Image (cartoon, rainbow, N blue to C red; front, side, top):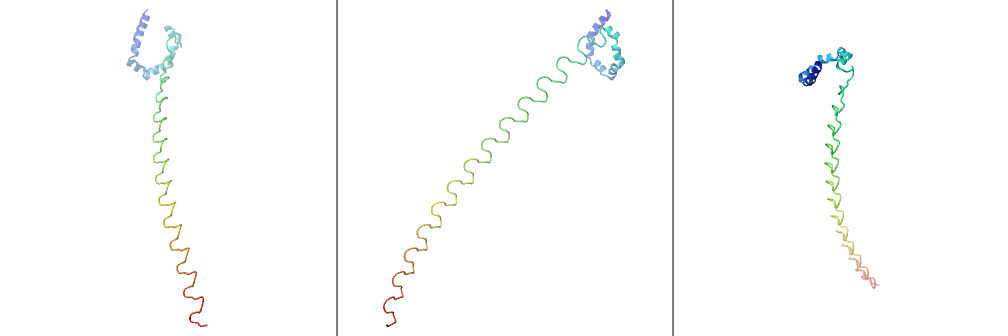
Length: 179
């Protein structure tokens, strides 16, 4: 009866005490951990008498959570749902552009500094080229009619082609002779 009362009191007090800093510091010392890690301590807990006194068989656990395991909820240090930290699985990735006009490029329309249609600057592709004459009378030439300084028909100047040549006598008594 007394033992039942003590266990009942311990059940109430022990969780409160184990939540204190002092209890945790005491359990965190090397001495406490080493004492629990010895073969003697483990063997003492493994004897039938110790477990029989508590009503359980040695090496078994009849209720509650097994030590060092987690059977429910989120495992420590893991993330099973939602967005993983430091990753981006949807939407626009940072520092990239996947749609629309890329920065610094021009893919449509007139490219800067070029002219692809119409009259190119500094050229003339149609009509009369500057400084040339392709039709009509060329300047300084004469292609038809009388060329200047020439005579192609009629009496050449200074010549006589018919009749009595000047200074000659073709018939009758020659001057200065007597026949």
